[in-house]
Length: 107
Image (cartoon, rainbow, N blue to C red; front, top):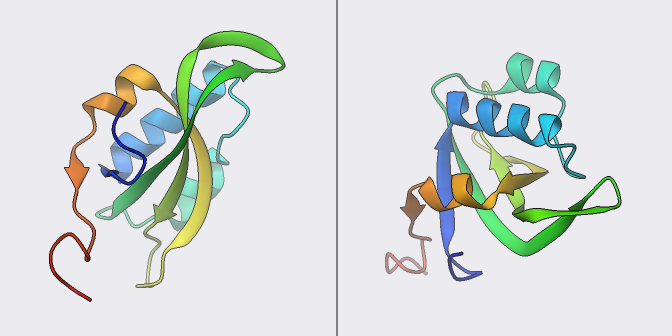
């Protein structure tokens, strides 16, 4: 897994796919798919912050996955909406990393 301060990014199609996988895996943190489809910016990029490695789903021990805070880009807004999503570890590691404003020298 990446360092806790390392952020990842996903476009809307990828985020919807990751959410479907989380629902199918019965992970504890998922997002409502109908609400996502209605409100997410189809061309949006969503920033993903890993918060912890997690190994339970529905109270049972399962393969490791990453509990993430997601900054969702919605239609018509520049302010992100926060959500929580458990993402399969292998899928999480495939996502591109992004730098924070601080890492890019912005104060």
